[in-house]
Amino acid sequence: MDVHVIVKLKSSYEAWHAVFADDEENRSKICDESRTLAGRADDSTALVTLFDVDMEAMGAMMSDPKFHKLTEDIVEEHFAYTMTSIETPE
Image (cartoon, rainbow, N blue to C red; front, top):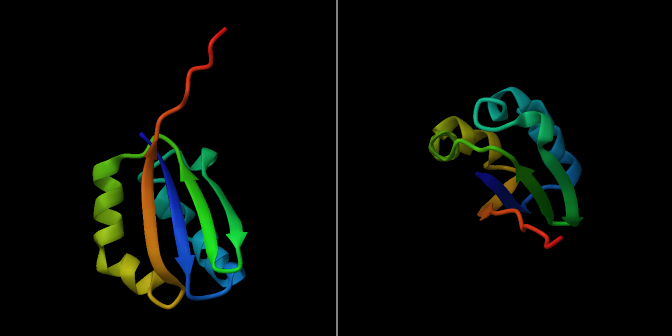
């Protein structure tokens, strides 16, 4: 399953992205990290798109106290949405 996450930031995008980039190894355990996309939407919002996500593993990671500790000073809230690709008519 593919997942899009809206990340409401407490910190600057640059501070968040430094932590996000450094957590690549953990993300690779829950998704196809080679396809992960991340970017700035505005000064207080980051966007992340994850592909081929193991939803159970993602839930476990996001509820892990280590994840909360890692993000508590930089993230206000995560809003996660599943995505389905649209087949275009030929």
